[in-house]
Structures are given as structure tokens and as C-alpha cells.
Length: 219
Image (cartoon, rainbow, N blue to C red; front, side, top):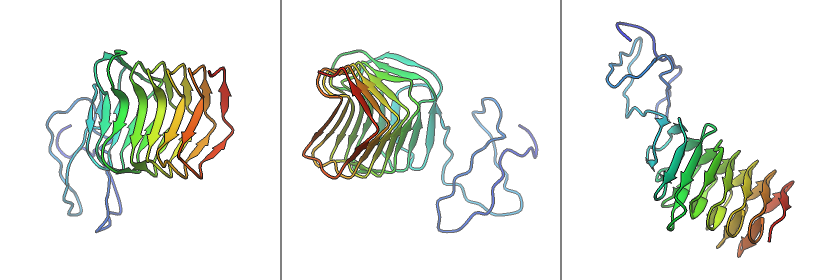
């Protein structure tokens, strides 16, 4: 893009607030580009490429990351989320581990808040598919987590989350597992089938709402 071609338009921008602008008019692959602000004064804190093609740590608060391809036979944890207000969109793709070690398809670190994990066609062959530790006020939706060594979806000390419209099947222990004071979560419209033990399992957790789920052929 050259000259004064418009690549983004936004209004209004409010002071003392987090404002996010998408460069929707930036076509193709651009490693280097200049930004010219017209009819105003804006200071940019950072620019993030929202597309991802490899396993990595996601550390930009407020970013939306969108997977662009399948990741197969990966050794180790695929995605580690280390900041708040992040959306990870699987975009209909698969992340596949190597069936060895204590690793995770998606893992959170620290006390995380307001995360969204969505649209993974399958998270498979890890120790756990999705592992939330001390993660609150977040959403796990429209994912499949199958054939993991331990659990498909596991929450530990994580509260006020929504787990909706997921499939957790053929995992080595539980499909969906809430433990260690994971309270006030909503589990709805999920399918948990053919897991070695329980489809949905709760341990030392309270005030969780479990509605309209299908659990079948579990051990």
C-alpha cells in the first residue's frame, strides 16, 4: 500500500481507555509499513499480527489470535497464554501433540482473566487438551478435545467461566474436569463421550451449573 491509501478507520477514540483498531485495509503480507494519522493525533502502543501458524506463547493483552493452519505431531505445550483479555481462535484447525510427556494443547500461566478459546476442530494427543489454572471470567466454546492422555478440558482453581458447545471425547481420564475450588462455572450444551472415566467430573468445587449436556459411553 502506497501513498495515502486508507487501511483503517476508527471513531471515536476515548482517552483513558483501551482502544483496539484493526488494519482491515492492509492487503497481503507487509513486513514494514508506515502509518499516517489523518485528522487527529493518536499514539500507538503496539501493533500485533493476529494470525498465527506455529505454537507459541501469547502475551499481548487484548489481542485476538487466529490460527491459520493445522499443527501436527508437536512436542511440548502448543499455546501458553500469559496475559489477560486474549482471544484464541482455532479457526477450524487442529492442534496435535505427540502423545508423550506432561504437555498441554492450550495452557494458561499466572492469574488470568477474560480469555476466550474457540473454534478448534480438534485438540488432541496432549496430556491435557485445554488446561485453565487460576483463570476466571473466561469462555471455552465450540472446540473438540479428544484422545488426550488425561483430560480434554481441565479447570483448576478457576471460577466464573463458561464451557459451552464443546466435544470432549475418548480422553484417558475425564472429558471435562473441574477441581480444586473451581466454583460458579457454567457447563452447558457440551458432549462428553467415550472417556475412560467420567464425561463430566467435579472435585472440591461448588455452585457450578451443569445443563443440557450429553454424557454417554463413559467408563
